[in-house]
Length: 337
Length: 259
Image (cartoon, rainbow over all chains, first blue to last red; front, side):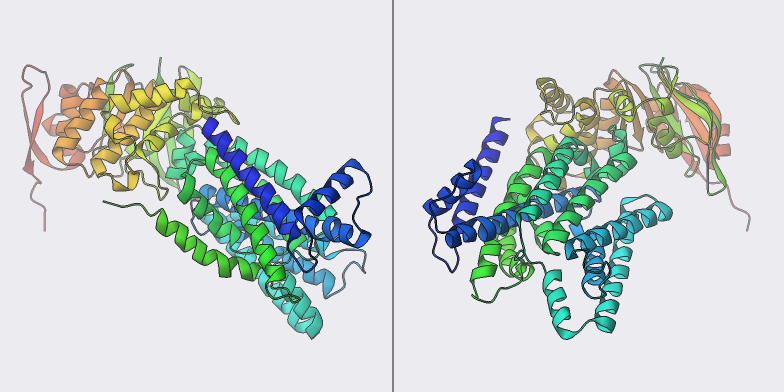
C-alpha cells in the first residue's frame, strides 16, 4: 500500500518536473522561473510580470500543448493496458476498436467534403466519426457472438471499412494541400492544442481512470480467460461493455484533439508490465504516468528537433520508442526454465 | 444443503447434451462424474458453476436458483478448477492464488489482511509456500494444477468443481492431487476418466451416458462389470472390494468387433 503510494507520488513528481522543464524548451528562451511566475499569476488571476508575448508563449502555446501531450500519453497508455487485458491480446491497442479510423473519416468528411458548412470543427467531426465506428464495432461483435476474439475481429473490420472510406474521400475529393494537412493530422499532432482541448480530455481521462481503477481486480481475473473470470465472480458481458465504452470514449476524445498518435497505447503497457508486474492495481497508475512523461518528452523533441519544421509526433513516438522498448524488455527479461 | 441440479437439460446447436439430469452431491463428500467422452460431464460442471445456463430445469445453491444470484456471491461459495488453465500473462504462483480473492474484494479498495491470510493458508495447504514467487510459465503440468487448486482454496469455497484435473499428469501427481482434494473439507464434484482413481477416491459416483444419469451410488454399486461393458464398451473384471470397501477394475480388452 505505502509502496504503491510512494510510486505514484514519485511518478507525479517526475511528471510535474517534465512538464515544467519541457515548457522552457523551444525557440524562445524561457526559464523555469518565468514559467512559474506566469503560472502563478494566471492561477491567481493577476497579471504576470512577463511581457505579453513571453506570457502568451508560456500560457497559450507551450503549456496547453505540453499538458495535452501528458493527457494523451496517459490516456492512450491506459486504454492500451485495459484493451490488452480485457481482450487477452498483447497486440491490442486503443485503436483496435476502430475508433481512430472512424475519427479520421469524420475529420475528412468535415475538412474535405465541407460537411457542416464551417459550423463543425475538425475535432467535432472526428469525435462523431469515432462514435459511429465504435457503435458499428459493438453492433458487429454482438451479432457475431460476444467473445474477446469476435470483439477484436469486429474492430478490425470497422477499422478497415473506415480507413477505406477515408482514402476514398481523400483520393476523389481532396486537393494536394488539404491531403497533406489531413495526413499530418492522421499521424498525430499536438500543434493545435488549446486550453479547451486540455480540459475536455483531462475530464474524460479522470472519469475513465476512476472507472478502470474500480475494475482493477476484475481485469486481473481475465488472465485465464473469460470463463475463468466468470467463475471468479465477474459479470463478463457487463464488465466488457462498460470498459469498452469508457476506453472508446477516452480514445475518441484524445484522437479528436490530437489525431491518432500510435505506438504509445500498444507498447507502453508492455514496458510498464515489465517494470511493475501484471497486477492492475499497480499497473494502471504506472502506465498512465509513464505514458504521460513519455509523450511530454517525445512531443518536445518533435517540435524542436528539426526547427522550424515540426515532425508528426506519431513518427517520433515510434522512432524513439522502439529502441527504448527493446531496451526495457531486454533488461527485465526473465529466465525461463 | 449444497449445490444441486433438478432435471437439467442443455441443448447446443439442436443437439441434446444433457437430458434431465438431477444431481444432489452429498455435503462434504467427493462425488465423481464418470462417463465416456461426450457424455456431458463438462457441460454438467459448467451448469453447476453457473457459467452456462440450463435450457430446462434448475441449478440451486442452498435451494436458491443460481440464475437469481449475483456472480460474485456464487464465486464466494463455488470454486472451479478447469481441465487445463493457461495464460500468457507473466504471473507468479502467489499472483495466481491471489486471483481467488477477487470475489471477496471491493472495488477501489486494497487487499485486506484477510485476503493475504487466505492466500498464505492456501499456499500452505497445497505445499506451495516455497514456490510462491516462481513464475507460472516455468511450472510443470502437475504444479500448475496444484496452483489452480490453491487459487480455488483462496476463494474459501464450500463447493469445489474439478473438470478432469488429473489429465496429463503422471500417476504420482494424479494420486497426490486427488488425495489433496479428498482431504479438503468441501463438497467436491470431480469429472474423471480413470475408473480406478474414481473408485479409490470418490465417496459417490454418478455415471453419465449420452447426457443421462444411468447409475448413481457408491463406487461398489456403480462400478459393475456389466455396466462398464454397457457404457464404455470394454470388458473388465471388477475384483471384490477389500477392507477399504473399494472395488478394483482390471481392463480385459474390447469385445471382438464385427468386420
